[in-house]
Image 1 (cartoon, rainbow, N blue to C red):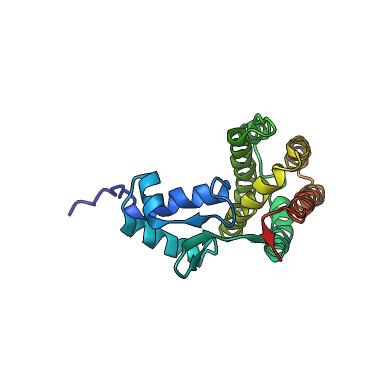
Image 2 (cartoon, rainbow, N blue to C red; image 1 turned 30 degrees about the vertical axis):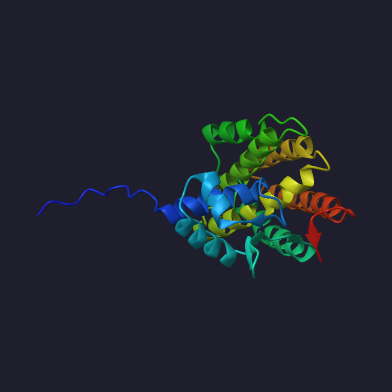
Length: 227
C-alpha cells in the first residue's frame, strides 16, 4: 500500500478573514475603539459577510474585538491592565528564553538576526513602522525558538502579537527604534559568546524599556486606552 503524499489545504474563507482582520488590528490600521460593520468589512477585503461574521467571533475570543448591541463590533481598546499583563508575561518568559538560547547560535543565524535588527525605519511613516514591528517580532520569535523549548516559543509568539499593537500605538508618540536595534545588537553579542546571564539581563532591560515607552505614550490624555 502506497503512502499518501500530504497535500497543502488552502485556508478556509473564515481563516483568511481571521488572518486579514487580525493583521489590520495588530498593526492599528483598524484603530482601538473603531466601529466595524460586517457589510463594510466584507466589501473592503473582498469576502462574504458569513466568513467575516465568523472571523469577528473568533477575534472576540482573542479579545481583539467586542460585540456591541445594535452597533455591530468595535476594536477593543488597549487598557493599562492589558499593558501590565502582556509585558509582565514577556518579562517572565523572554529573559529565560534568552538565557536558554545563549551559546546555541551559529554564524548564519547571527547574520539573519543582525539583518532583522537593521530593518529601515522612518518616523511617522505607517508602512515603515509596520515593517519595523514585523522585523522586531521576527527577531524575538527567532530568539525564542533558539531556546529549544517549543512551548515557551509559542507562548512568546502569542504575547508578541498582543504587544505589537501596543508598540505600534507607542511609536506614534516616541521613536525608540534606534534604541531597540542597538539593544538587539548587544543581545546578539551576548548570545554568540554564550553569556547566558548577560543575555537574560539585556532582554529584561529591553522589554522593560518598551513597556515604559508604551505606558508613557498610552497614558497621555488623548490616548485611546481605557483603565
